Length: 101
Image (cartoon, rainbow, N blue to C red; front, side, top):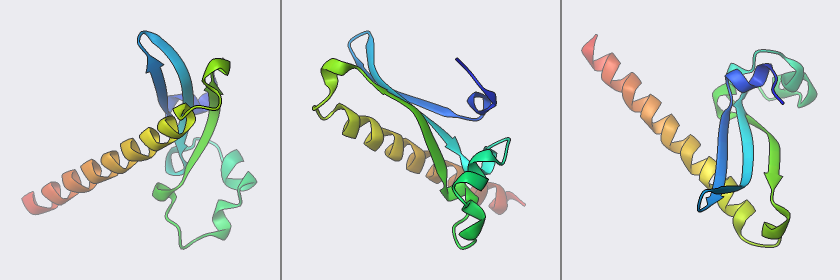
């Protein structure tokens, strides 16, 4: 199963050993190739929020035996932490590039 969002999405998963037990797809609004999500969630009605700060989460799966555990919170928290680290990395690269100009 795939669609046009897979090309710009980040996929996060939680594993128990070699087995994936949970996963989700996160699509940055700024990179969404279509406006379907932008329109559905009325993102344009929030001009004070930069598109780079918005993500659409989909394809959330959790193995039945892991329901009722901390797995879902760990997955969502890990995705959030990864996004913040990526943003800091991008900001640092932009600052370094600006100092070279």
